[in-house]
Amino acid sequence: MKNIVIAGGSGGIGLELTQRLLPKYNIHVLARNRRDLPQAPTIHFHPFDFLSDQALPVIDGELDALVYAPGSINLKPFRSFKMQDYQSDMEINFFGAVRFVQHYLPQLNKQRAAIVFFSTVAVDSGMAFHTSVAAAKGALEAFSRSLAAELAPAVRVNCIAPSLTKTPLAEKLVANEARLKAAEDRHPLKRIGQPSEIASCAEWLISDDANFITAQTITIDGGISNIK
Ligand SMILES: NC(=O)c1ccc[n+]([C@@H]2O[C@H](COP(=O)([O-])OP(=O)(O)OC[C@H]3O[C@@H](n4cnc5c(N)ncnc54)[C@H](OP(=O)(O)O)[C@@H]3O)[C@@H](O)[C@H]2O)c1
Image 1 (spheres, rainbow, N blue to C red):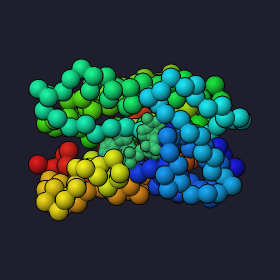
Image 2: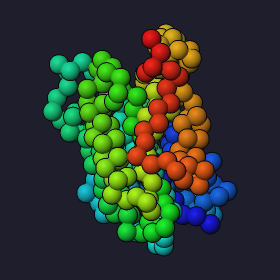
Image 3: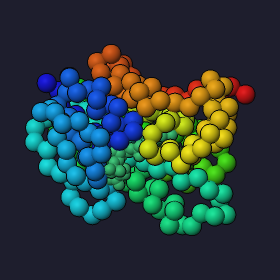
């Protein structure tokens, strides 16, 4: 059975990915809380906070895939952002991902392994109020492509860039009917994303079906970035 570490595998898109991989993988989940993580012999929960100075958990054995899902959506006008906001967005979206990969890279399968990160559609689209998260995820995307170059051919490294998706992280953005309707209307496909629609792409990216794909950012956005 293959081994995977999913940072943030207990909530939102990460939880959906954990559930999809459950029959096929031995899954190590890193998060602060178990949340709705199922109890199963193949799921191993390691409490961990990427915003702390704790050492990352020791996980024995060879690993076939790493997925880093923790992130933020702090949306404000530029004038309202403090430097601290930019710093904390970089911590969770970028430095957390770097620490994660640094720690587990030596254990990755030397022949064939995969790494998946989560970016945002706002990196390439220029969306108001997104200066902080777009910058942090932009750093992550650039890191991901350079890492893909260094680790090829053994390790494939890719990003997924979703638009608004129905998860706990996005709850406050669609907290009432009017906000949800406005968000749906902004998307050409007239709805927001479902966690399963993003997790299925991650599942595919770490599978052998995606063995010729590396250094890509795959946008999943209901058409919002390309249709005017
Ligand atoms: N949802 C969207 O609309 C959307 C849009 C664009 C991009 N994205 C990106 O997609 C990724 C997944 O988002 P999501 O909506 O599924 O997020 P989510 O619902 O907040 O789930 C995030 C997961 O990461 C864990 N996590 C968060 N902070 C952590 C920390 N400091 N240390 C350890 N674990 C932590 C959470 O568990 P604990 O809180 O218990 O630790 C949870 O398991 C993120 O990178 C996000 O930026 C999401």
